[in-house]
Image 1 (tube, helix red, strand yellow):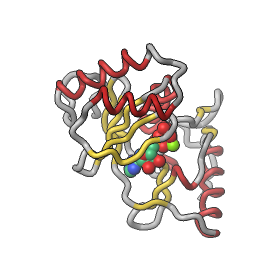
Image 2 (cartoon, rainbow, N blue to C red):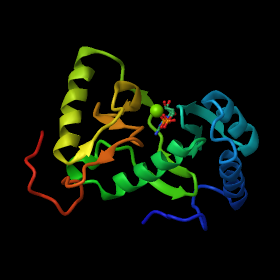
Image 3 (cartoon, protein in one colour):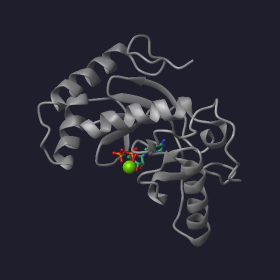
Amino acid sequence: MPITNDKGSSFLSSKEIGSINAWISEMKKYPLLIPTKKRKLAQRTLELPYKLIGNGLNRIVYDLDNGYVLKIAFSEIGLISNGQEFSLYHSAHPDIKQYLCPVKEKGQGWIVMKKMERKAPINLENLQKLSTLTMKFLLRGIIPVDLRLANIALSHDNEMVVIDYGLFIKALHGKTDQSNDDVPSAK
Ligand SMILES: Nc1ncnc2c1ncn2[C@@H]1O[C@H](COP(=O)(O)OP(=O)(O)O)[C@@H](O)[C@H]1O
Ligand SMILES: [Mg+2]
């Protein structure tokens, strides 16, 4: 069972968790700062000993160098995205769980996610796979907001894995969780 609080992480030291907590309190003072500036401020405040692997408009991502990445919010949307990825992954129906990049731990403002090595290039095959994948999520009551190739990686057996699903929305009466089995398979 993944750890869902800030005590006893199997990935981060208490010093690292302390500096993330400090950053999250700091971040809340600057809601209007532009993303580039906020990301730089985050990096400076955090001072983490990991290599930066990427960032979007809401989260900064470090390579933990053990097959996992650390995603830290630098905006309110980033905070929501981290919570959403953790909860969607852990409540997903098996039909779609395989397409969501696994989230191992979450704390205040951060999550640890499996590191994916291969990006999905833009080509006809991947665009077709993307629309099939979109249907699979919709059939399980998930609106895959912002699902595009930039947010997708490929597994070793060429299956699509979504690495940024922080903006996905569970439809109110959707069939999203493991207990719902009456939706036809989209395979
Ligand atoms: N699981 C992952 N494995 C490898 N790289 C990742 C992973 N998750 C995110 N990244 C990198 O970090 C970038 C930003 O992460 P993302 O989740 O898209 O943040 P945001 O919510 O700000 O858009 C991605 O574009 C990608 O380059
Ligand atoms: Mg993104």
